[in-house]
Length: 159
Image (cartoon, rainbow, N blue to C red; front, side, top):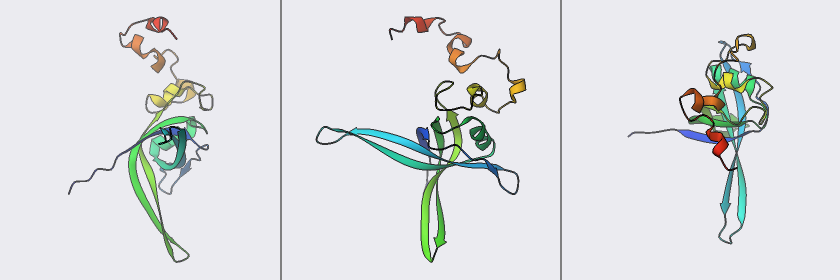
């Protein structure tokens, strides 16, 4: 029987990540993502519901989160569900969490944290030190122009 385990979430981080390293030197951090859902009830009222999802990030992704993610940061998480089980006072306990395979920083600079560092360094892939950050490299905000797209098209937007 085939199986498929894929989770895609978009939400805001509820607290600053705390980066730690396990015995073999691998970075790990746990975050909680607040994911909002807005729907209309049968009576026509809008109801907002927030789901809090625990997410574990490993390796370089954990280091990037520790460096660039702060409380309130909007993130897109792509990962898989994992069931943690343990025993406490003779009772079996369990909890579902998401193990992150990929993380995408969302929002512009200055939105939801970022600790004042260039957002695009982490978004491009492996982070570089601030000393080697290339200020002349095209920013994601400039991507259409850098890829031969229409230059100045944003001036035609009516809002």
